[in-house]
Image (cartoon, rainbow, N blue to C red; front, side):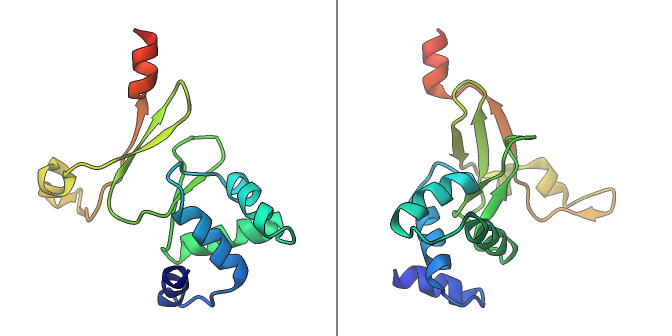
Length: 141
């Protein structure tokens, strides 16, 4: 719990019980939940928390750089990731699972090595990949 409070304070945020509950929920999972998923979990422990509070807390945490908001589902509901380390995401078109992909793009990426594109300085790349996860690929063979 102290790490969660410290993370919030480091971002200049008051560690309210709602913020603590939302951030704690996100840091304990790796499934890239939607705001509805987070709300459905948090409301079990904190029955008085509102959906609006969870949504506004996620928006604030994202704006402050404490979590990532992902739009990998294209026109679907956004999902969230508490891992700030540089990584990419893979969405399985069959089961809908989102998988973190870690690869050494910083040292091997031709775009990063170029340093700029049309005068725009490239500092970081985050990719969304789509296809079949290993479990679904095995089922389909």
